[in-house]
Amino acid sequence: MADSEPSYIDYEAFLDPSFSPTAFANTLVTATNNASDTALDLSTPLSRVLFDVQEIDSHIHTLSTKAALPLLAHTAARTAAAQRIGHHVAAHLAALTDNYRRLEAEVVQRHATAADVHAAAVRLALTVTVGRAVGRCLLLARQLEAQMADLLPAPAAGPAPARKEDHRAMVRAASTLHSLRRLLAASQPGEEGEHLARVTVIATLQAELLAPAEQRLLARAQQAVREFSTSSLAPAGAATATTTVTYAQTEETKARTTSACLALCFLSPPPPPSLLGDDGSTDFQPALLLTALQTYLQTALTASLAALARALGTLPTLPRTLLEVAARCQNIVALEALLAMIKPPGALLGARTAGGGSVSTGNNTTGNLLQPLLAALDTASLPSFFWRSLASGLAGRVQEIVGRGG
Image: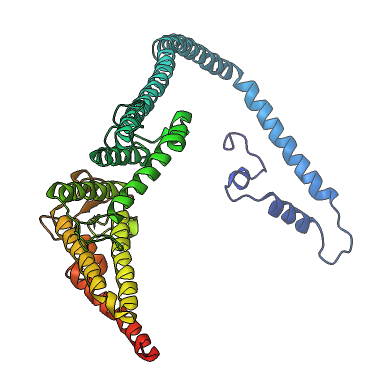
């Protein structure tokens, strides 16, 4: 176009990508004005710009007039092609819409229904799990009630003889209570007792049955340990210094004490997570049993020390006092032998601790209830602990007696 119809307009400058309107206007103003003039004449550059615009408009009008038919034909062809494309796109869009509606009916709606069914199934499964856990708790609670009735028989009505106490029921009740406590403690996500704390009947069961039963069992077991005695020494004030203790009575005492020790093992709380070893296991440490046995030993030491202190002040009673101290030592020897024969309950050795670890018997392959007590007292045997403690406590009493001149 520029070659067939020459023009004074520099089209190349306007078509240059680096063209700047402000730079072009500044060039026109400086070309038509003197730099020393105080007032600028903008009419000349403005006229130049208007002439250029008019020239470009004339070229556009000339070109559109000469090429009107080709432009119209090209536009008609483009419009027809766009319409054909539109028809094809509309057909594909209609097919796609139909396919989506069919998929929505076959997949989306069914998925929504399946999601509702899945949610209902999950809730039903959770309900069944909680129901089974509650049912197991109630079953164990009924067993505990029956075992406590065997342990604490009701007084007989009328002339019928009263039912004898079954001390073995102490172990059965403590084992059942231990199972209940483990079930209720399994409250982590995914465990059997996760939702039991929110069940009202379980809270009532804990308050009205488990807590009182545990207190009664603990008191009965501690009493049996506290009353352990196999000596034949008669009480103070009796006509003779000794009494006859039959073999059956001794065996009954040992059996009752064995049941009490096993019950205290079951009633002892699990070790805290801080006592877990590197492999997640901990030594068997029945805290309640150790406390009861240490109380028994301390009671024997205190009574023996007080009796010896009194006897050293009144020498005629010394032989009797020495017999009493020897009888207490005899009971301790019998207790040591009994504890050495009692194995820890297998249910406790395979149980989980409060921190998720397991309970073991340490390096010992056999395991008995004497070893935790010896470890807690830091002694090799109970009689040596008794006599060493008695001697250390008696030294001060002897000094007091010597100082008084008795």
